[in-house]
Length: 410
Image (tube, rainbow, N blue to C red; front, side):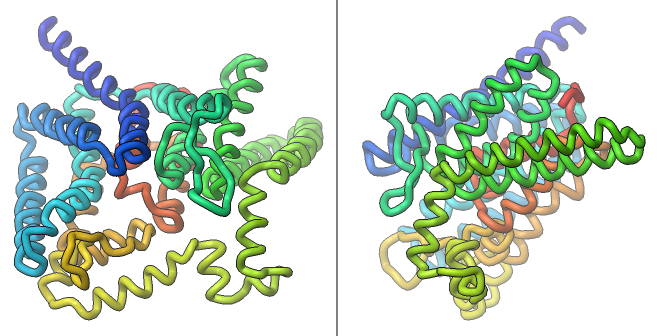
């Protein structure tokens, strides 16, 4: 009995060691991209090993559902790679395999972690998500302050991404972990609240991208709505009045901060580039596509046209990401709207394999407000900005949000 408990504790430490290692792996990958010219396979190799480690842990107890799902995914992967070889040749196999791993990392990690949770091996506490966010914020803010960070954009727009590489991925991480961090601060002393809030605000405004700022607005609106609704239902009119005044002051301060940020400057740059002078000018497909969706609607139309022209096997099994119009292994432009990228590039069968574990392994439970807001942001960002469900660095955190927690404190 004691040995079993020691083994479970050691396993849990290894799992969390990897999860806390995530920000460091992302920094390592970023340096490889900037100074070598391509991403290092070291970080990818660590993630592959972690996936196999989770699989090995789960298979010890021979979960029938797990064995069935892994078998089905294995068949799909074989069919997909075989079809890509027949249609595109061997030169595209590595490109397709790498993209396949990035996409199916999420359902596989979610499945393995959920099985380990049900076996009593995995325990998740929301405060661990807060610590992971603090690591990401540290690698974003401190290099920026020291002026040794990287720019968020190659030209035109302004912003700094610290020691990371992808603004979309880091923006997504700051967004979906933001509710846990802000609710965690509410439990702390007043001076910790102020420092923590300033640290978080500094991080999201440094990036200069829309996702974390708009996500913060959604978080605040959800919290304010629930807070004021409770005061109204309890008929605490004095607290309601004072809270309204306080919220008004905070809104003015927040607006001032927004107007001084890289986020607002980038909006102005984008509007000037599109030649938009008034709101009515924005109400065209072209401007909405460029300003709100960053041309994702155009990419969606282009990908749909490509999908309609491929043969039936590729519609069912997936047409992959390799561009068949060129001879060299080159990826076609992704839509960056996760739901559509999965459907179009991995077909009917691949989409089924992607969503299947959420019906088989999901355990119904009550969510805290912070978790509900985070789930709302995950669903929205996966549609509007992508890089949430098909990016291993982000999707592993999405899995932790969905899986039941051991300690319900934030």
